[in-house]
Length: 301
Image (tube, rainbow, N blue to C red; front, side, top):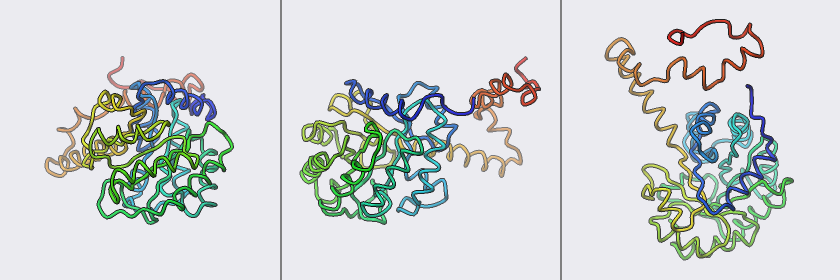
């Protein structure tokens, strides 16, 4: 009932243990708090909160238009709904190093288990689009140092994302990954790797956990979790998968209503009333106060 009973500190410790376990962890992307609860129910290890999803949910493109307040608020709403650790995309840190430091503390306050900060210019671009620009090494490492120095919980994970592979090549990506680890990064997110051998090159370059982004319609093939584990990847995210699935279903339903004058053709693919009530744990509220839940759901007798 209400929110998670697991504290943010416990979630962060669990996340650290998970990354050190020698197995790969799958973090689907939640697009709202209820989807985070579904991710947990289906047995996944954690929840990812995508900057693209947060922007798209506001009707905006993923080009750095969201603010720290918007991201911290929405990410906190998602994180508090699950006992799983949640990590969030903090884009470029929302400003200069001092802003990055503040961002980390705001995300700690919001209950996140960690965040990743990238080395693009601001305004940034989606990591799987062409035409990206990355900052110089000094700027990139200052962001990570500021983030690492600012955290108060040592288990809050600072992940450095680098987009330099698409701009300067794989060797530049391995060099930058090493430098970001030296600056204090607990993990590396190498964006837009083209094949498994490139993930292997990053694995060979650093001794911290690495993340693979398995986003649809991107630069990387959609490798299986076993393929990624075999090249040393510790964590895989599916950032926009649930949002795309949900919006695809919504579009089909609206088209059906428009064409047929009724949603009848789509009802069979919808989440039922009973299932929705189960996800929001309606009966637990009934046990707390029978005045809240004093009726029967049709078809459940």
